[in-house]
Amino acid sequence: MFFYFPGDTTINAELFLVLLTIYIFVSRIVLLNLIVSILGDTYSVVTARSKPESMRERCGIILEISSYLSSSRKKKLADDFRWVHVMAPFDSSSSDPAGGLVGDPSWSSALGTVVKATDRTHKAALGFQEGLDTAGKLAKDLGAVLQLKQKAAFGRQTLAALLEDEAKFLMHTNRGERPDTTPVVHVNADRDDEP
View 1 (cartoon, helix red, strand yellow):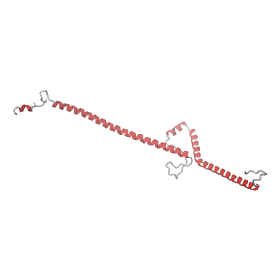
View 2 (view 1 turned 90 degrees about the vertical axis):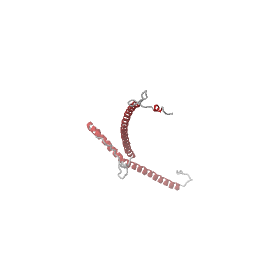
View 3 (view 1 turned 30 degrees about the vertical axis):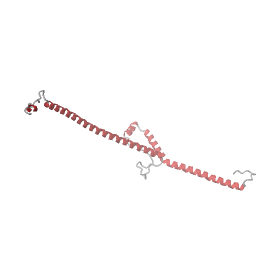
């Protein structure tokens, strides 16, 4: 429709030029707007990644410097290693106890992973310590129970020996007398005079 062919009588030539000019003008504005939005988005991505990238480069430099250290110095550093250092952008206005990471979310997820792993390890160590404490208490209680059991067994043996001695003392002989006592007079022997 917007193509002008000489000799075409269906559209006015002046109207065609006006519409073509408007179309070209609007399409140029839309394309310019598209370029501006692409550049703006690219700028915001580059700005957001600039701080983490600079820190990554610093880490690379630190690793390169550490590769030049002597083996004794590396061993000393490995023996004295106590902390994990994570370089990340810091936002002091954040209420996050990890320090308010901003920028690339992979930094915050890496630090979050370290914090979570540390918490899990700490909880596991506490659970293990509680298990050891409980096992110690159970061993102590078991020792007390075993001592009571030994005392009870000794008491039962002593009681059995005493009862056996008493049984021997109270046993009657074949003649109906108790040993180590005076002879027993039967009640039936005195009843001869009853009717």
